[in-house]
Image (tube, rainbow, N blue to C red; front, top):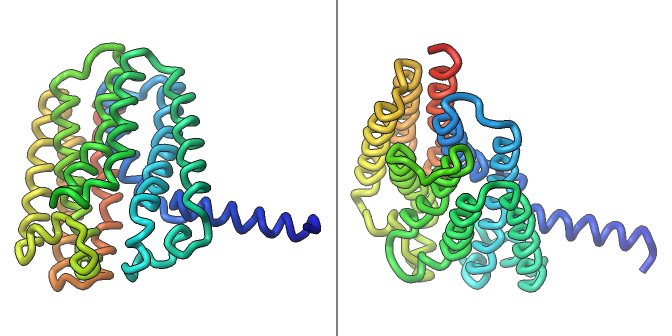
Length: 295
């Protein structure tokens, strides 16, 4: 193969791998990053150690990428039947299952190297997190609440952040944050599931969007309300003041806007509502950071 042809082939492979990792769609990274930053700032009562912060930010990107790859491996036989996913590299036959498994293994290895820089307790928690991330894509075949399971996988960085910063088991505030994030994730991933509900019904996979049925908007609204209440309680435990409450109020306004977007259950507006969730996550973080910076 001529050098130019080899370079072209390599370029295509790398592009397919980046698509498997969703590098061009960073929303999942943001949704995983914001709760991680909440936990790091509260655990450290301010700006955390620079090395720990760097490890967790890199870990968020790597584990989100690994989760996307294993999700496409699990769904490789059904993605072709869903309008939104039919062009994904595995579903379209652009990469092999073996290549995807190799990429998944490489990402897990990188994550393992990162977590080795932290204490033993955090390493043990990381093993649970890896199991959650690897098993989540298969949950939609067995029960109607895969979004709840995703919430556990996305929120596991919260207790890990506390163990990394303090070297001790996570306190009650960490688990309250974890539960709040789990509920929030269930809500926004339900909106994501509303985009694919018709296709999911055809291919036989389960979701909270299908489970809630005509009460989907109510279900999303209740998860958002409960998440805010739990975050308010977590803030009280952590001694967070008015800056944090302003952050929660801003998040609530975004939740109201999302309810407006999904009012007619239009597929693409539901997707926009899902994407909008990076903003409440960021506003809550800014409220936490402002508390420790200026209170």
